Image 1 (cartoon, rainbow, N blue to C red):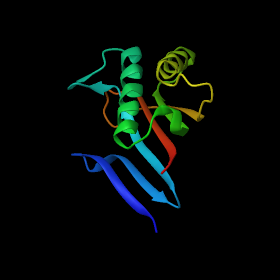
Image 2 (spheres, one colour):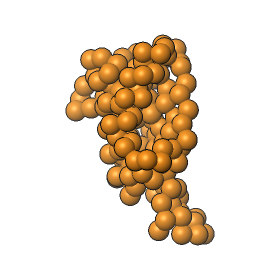
Image 3 (cartoon, one colour):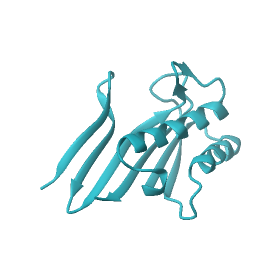
Image 4 (cartoon, rainbow, N blue to C red):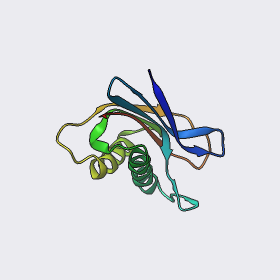
Length: 129
């Protein structure tokens, strides 16, 4: 039997995270987290990258996991270049401090759901229950 939990439903019609548990393993899928916090968008790419990674950690915690439980990380960056890639990596390194890092993909995109957004980070985590 598989059980599902929908964590932190968003008014825009999605859940910030969904978990499913089967055979003693809980898998957590975290929706893309962005550079928006406390009612405002980050003013720079650097600030948004930090916010997105902090928001990801918060959603993982709400679903019963930590960044150490992440097995796959996807990052979407508007107008990706080497500078933004480096900044995103630095923001990630502040949150993902463990020795064993998750599998990771970085994708350059032309835009995200709102024009103010510059980065979005989503994750899959696995925990034993």
